[in-house]
Amino acid sequence: MDPASLPEQLSVVSEQVLNSSGRSVTAAVSLRRFLCYGSESATYSTRECALGTESALALMQLVEAGRGCEVVEEIRRSSLEGRAVRVSPSLFALAVCSQHADCRTRQAALKALKDLCRTPAQLFTFVQYKKELRQGSGMWGRALRRAVTDWYNSQDGMSLARTVTKCKHRAGWSHQDLLRLSHMRPTNDTVAVVCKYITKGWKGVQEAYADKENSEEVQKVFGYLEAVEKAKHCADEQELIHLIEEQRLEKEQILTNHLKSKEVWKALLKEMPVAVLLKHLGKLTANKVLAAGSADVAAVCERIQDETALKKAKTHPFNILVASENYKRGHGKRSKLKWDPDRDIVQALDCAFSKSVSTVEATGKRFLLAVDVSSSLSSVTHGSSISTVAVAAAMCLVFAQTEPDAQIVVFSEGSVRPCSVSSEMTFMQVAAQLIQTPGGSTDCALPITWASENDKSVDVFIIFTNNQTFGRENPADTLKTYRQKSGVFSKLIVCGLIASSLSVADPEDRGMLDVCGFDSQAVDVIRNFALDVI
Image (cartoon, rainbow, N blue to C red; front, side, top):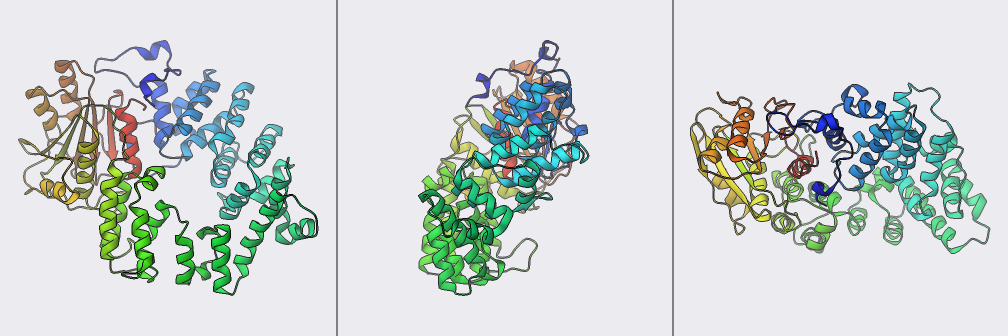
């Protein structure tokens, strides 16, 4: 969905005035940044910071100004439209709105709870935020009790049974706590079975339902919970595998001791989501679950190359890259786990990367991607544990193949050189073009100056650098000069791949963004920024 078509609901007249360098940062923009990545500043960092009212000043300002209902709607849309790369900021903002003095704001926030809290973990997190904001006293009023009750009652029995057995507690809360404090009353029979399981355990469910004539739906929920309980105490491997396959049980529902079995893992693999599978490839290879040349390896390779599955899972090429580089390394980042990378899996990951590029939607913007080669690109990227050259090469390749108007350049002291990246090139070929002989100091203003001197029309500059010093010229000032000459409100994104902090972006200019480190969420932040969502 094109953000330009969305109304600027949260802009007041005084905030619509443009400053001398372009569009100013409004309270609406600050709120959207906070909802997206948890900070109102023009800096995205791979390190998540603790959330509090002091880090959400625009949120507090808008709510106190009587615009709480509009804020809630913005929170809801941000979440449902996939603009929020982190879940916690939206839950925190909703918690703030849910206990404001304005009755309409409170009602709107609690009504949105079902839409925003898609998992038990998110519901627990929301409740914990409310507790922290109220400092633990008097928060369980009638409205919150009703909202929590509605969250459970809005789900069908089987879905609820799956979620509550996969995530039993989080952030200091459990399902038993919430049912007790909300005075939960199930509105249908299947939810009643799950609630009985939560409050009285499997024994209570047996006593209430085992010897009764139950509806088909109740029997299904009963059978599923029975399978979960049997899996906990099962001593026979074949019986456990049968339970996993019959009821599609997942890893979170299996005891750690049972996960030592290769055959159990093979059973889990059949229904394992692609994202989870990519995360566990190293462990599965180390534990010989994926043996070289086996049918299991062939099945896994087929799954991770399935273009339809990749698209359905919204797997960005960067996620495939991280999984591939970590797998090729042959050992865990922190653990002692080691493995010999399987050749077929490595090839499948390379193929999956290429296929996943086609799932990326173009923004239609004019991009200039500039890679700083004034120092070695062999450093490890903060937030991703892969080399900085891998990050830069992957992003250049993705933009070159998906955006109709994207130019790639490399730069070092006093020099900018166009870099030819075509849709036919492989990842390794692009990486080879970026590996230059390092030398000189970094000047991140160079690509903007080059675009100006060569009459290049650019909507978004994206600069990738290993350095934390940026030469004599301030890139922000150079960008403002470029805007005046070109008549285009160009944006600037500086990605400090090994930086823990950056201060390039003008905090008062909506068109500038610093990225500290790089991870899969940074990819979405860049897209949102380019599309004027944040």
